Length: 86
Image (cartoon, rainbow, N blue to C red; front, top):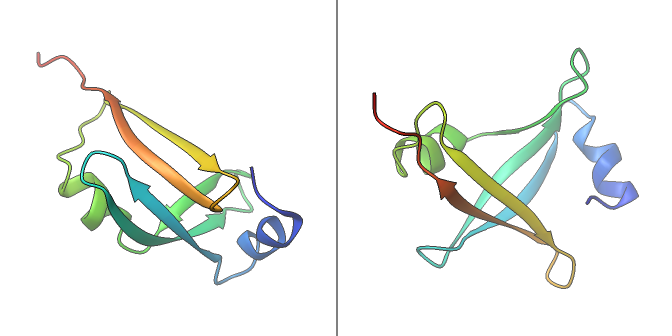
């Protein structure tokens, strides 16, 4: 999903700025993608909690989707399914 340059940049201390298109509100956001060395996992940082988790009222168990649009070099984000309330 990432170019070789982006993958290397995500492994740096700063990470790499990534544009994310939120499908439902047709709005663009910029987050930082970083690869944690300890777990080898990619995570979004800087405003992920504010712009996505809180704003979209995401809860544990919600299913979200990301896909990268190679033509525009952006990620698309959507909430696929809300967790059932218990």
